[in-house]
Amino acid sequence: MEFKHIPVLLNETIEGLNIKPDGIYVDGTIGGAGHSKKIIEKLSDKGFLIGIDRDEEALKAAKENLKEYKNFKLVHGNHDDIKTILSELGIDKVDGILLDLGVSSYQLDEKERGFSYISDNKLDMRMDKTQKLSAYDVVNKYKEEKLADIIFKYGEERFSRKIARNICLARKNKPIETTKELAEIIEKSIPFSKNGHPAKRTFQAIRIEVNNEIEPLYNTVLDCIDLLKVGGRLCIITFHSLEDRAVKEAYIEAQGKCTCPKDLPYCVCGSKTLGKIINKKPIEASKEELEANSRSASAKLRIFERREKR
Figure 1 (cartoon, rainbow, N blue to C red):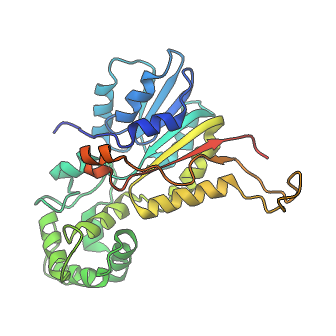
Figure 2: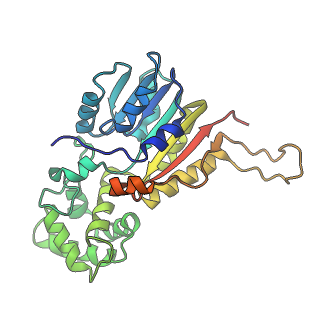
């Protein structure tokens, strides 16, 4: 299957990065290189792009889509390890970083990856096929209480306890091996669903758990800010309320907050800041983009600029 992914908030992200022609930029979730191609187009021969992705299929697609360029390097890895990755490349600071979080259109549409509830394929959901933990392990090996907590926390599913209970009852007879089996158990556990397929929230929760998408994010954001040169920008696109909350809280922490009375001519409270939040409210998809790509509906872009420490 061809790796296809429509980059979300493309123009807004490129504008937000405020690209310097000779700068060094990192796309921590390069996917098919939709955003990265636009970044490279704005770079001179002295500029450079590092593309990171945990999905080897994404890296193959990125390499093909960027074949006309030379000033880039692709790395198979996780954006949570961005400090280590850049250190191994001998890079101390960069001019901009992009994180386009969540699952790609390709991963959702490629049925064999087991992300979709509208198929009958092996339970997998790994973005990185080299990792051991899969959806099969979560569904068949996690204790009922832990499973219910994950479904409630990451899927915001109010029927999480019943779903977890029915999963555990079903797996006593035989392991739950396919997406269809799991979806049918979930459907029987929910009396009704106003918001799309009843399995949507649970599948999302299991995917987030398998790929550890939320827990490290807060620290990853702070690591990214620490890697920026003064004037460098961090652009993060989220698709889930927990992702967005982690990004927002990390930005607030990095910006700091002066508690001095407003009539004082200068700060005396000792507040420290690493930079400035560029947009207090997240940037969302335009009406035109929503019509062209329904998957942009939940996308939110937040931008942070590195400033001198004070």
